[in-house]
Length: 172
Image 1: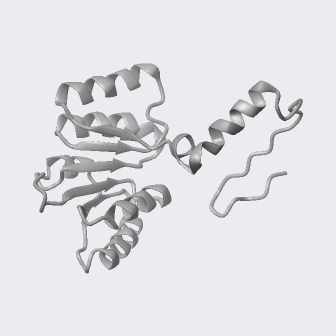
Image 2 (image 1 turned 180 degrees about the vertical axis):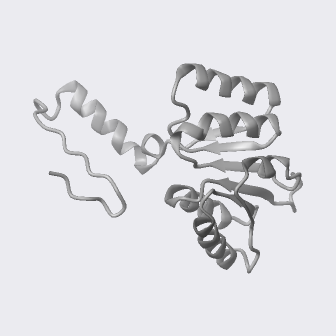
Image 3 (image 1 turned 45 degrees about the vertical axis):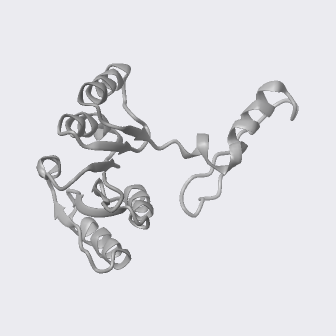
């Protein structure tokens, strides 16, 4: 890319996580979201409206077909935020189409699938990144916590409570 060009990005999977990640990319001066792909057209329409508001009115093209995204010569990179069982297939097809990939976790469901993805990335010389925010964000707090538990620094661990959601749903 030249210094005055922007990466043209497509989102595959317009759920909450994919839309959130893509909105973050759209907030950059060097990225424009040009295409959205989701089987649920009302979800992609909602995502398109939100992105248009943050992109000076530019509305991404919407489709239900991943192949249309991969065939689009204007798309440089894709965010794969499909249901987990589609991450491998979408990444491999994107790589073969020479599209760079940001893939949400989990990367794959099996070791074999993960190896096929890595091979497709290598053979097609694309950039691949996966979302692993709890390993990279928050100043290493998650890693330090794991180290404290493993070393016994906090004493014997007797109970673990996990809260999920946004906002977090209280644990029982």
